[in-house]
Length: 243
Image (cartoon, rainbow, N blue to C red; front, side):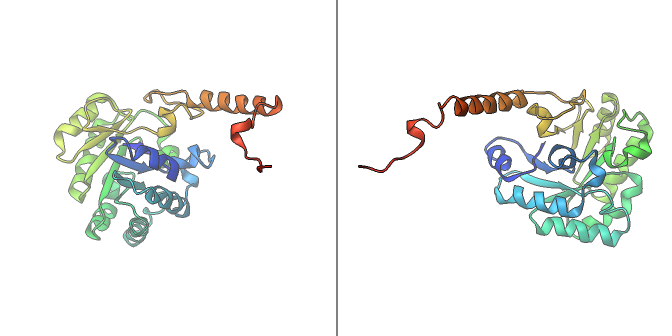
């Protein structure tokens, strides 16, 4: 699974063998320039979900429920999850474990698949004391078990010791997806901008497969140079009337 935020990238990635797209609330930092995911709203998520859905990918589309779109009540959670599904999401993802049991159960009861997210939960980074490694093994396991009981179809495990993620994977029956949690999950997820080298800060658990930021700069510098030197547009780039 990779994050995908827009139509053009969804079209490109639909031709790969990815299993799932995540329209992640990380679009707040990577697309909108926010300092965190806390500024992302339902309107933002709906807008970007529509763009990805228009690409008609064969991959499953999972959409993050943004901060304060599900915490207040079961009714609010179901209504907002339903809105994302109406826009084309195949499933929603929300953060939290034991404390989100009733929210998850209500959304699942409404017929909407839910992906859980435990360990480091970025929407709660303030309460957690920052974006840090989560070490409480028993709490992580309890969160996973609660989510499974509530009816999630899979669980993202973020930024925990690999041994903890391995134990969770062994003790729950639903698939687990790691990000910064080692190789022992059933799947992996990364932020696309980290993979392509487009992000400003790359976390330790990301791998940059391409330095696209440098390639983009080089391409634009070549373009501006050719314009200033009169090399672009060249004859094949424009039409003239026949005499």
